[in-house]
Image 1: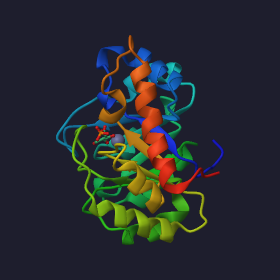
Image 2: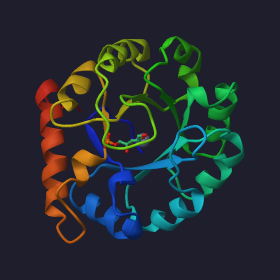
Image 3: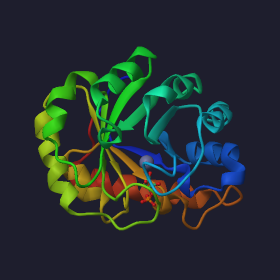
Image 4: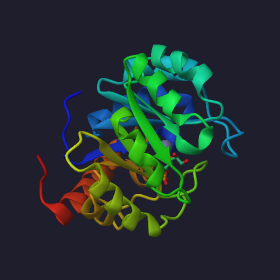
Length: 233
Ligand code: DX5
Ligand code: ZN
């Protein structure tokens, strides 16, 4: 993975057909997805349950590009090895998931995966300052984690702008997760985000038998984001 701040669209398979993950992953990549975003939920850190490392390992062969695994679980550390072994390129843990995020990020990097740090909407960016040397990606949650299809929280745009300033020249992606649409994508792109996760906005109106809608949705979000900033190298 070479670092670039160009806009990347990462469809979240939380909005895909759970009985058809392999075909869904192939369909979104064929239709222009840059990364595949995989939401892992434990019914404890967040009030919803999805799946674990065995499912990640099963879908890995169906993804040619980047598998971006978002862990909404607590505790995290005991499961890092298993998610790395499943073939995750990026493993993102939440700052709020436990008292030892520094150790968690070190443990992710030790597996050879890229380390991501997710921030809930209520969490400020102050704590990030001391973690910048340990992260490859910071995920700004623009909804409270747990469910797809929620409304974008606008206060997170200013937070993204401040985070972008804090990051400076460091090769750290800013990922936006939750409520990304053609209306909100320009706001976060202009604030400095480069990875846009989108679940409902990508999968709406499509299916593995009608994947062209996925492509149209991905292109519309990308165009809206790039329209706000111009094409970024
Ligand atoms: C929420 C997940 C998101 C979610 C986004 O907890 O982390 O990735 O699937 O879904 P939309 O784009 O529908 O808000
Ligand atoms: Zn997510």
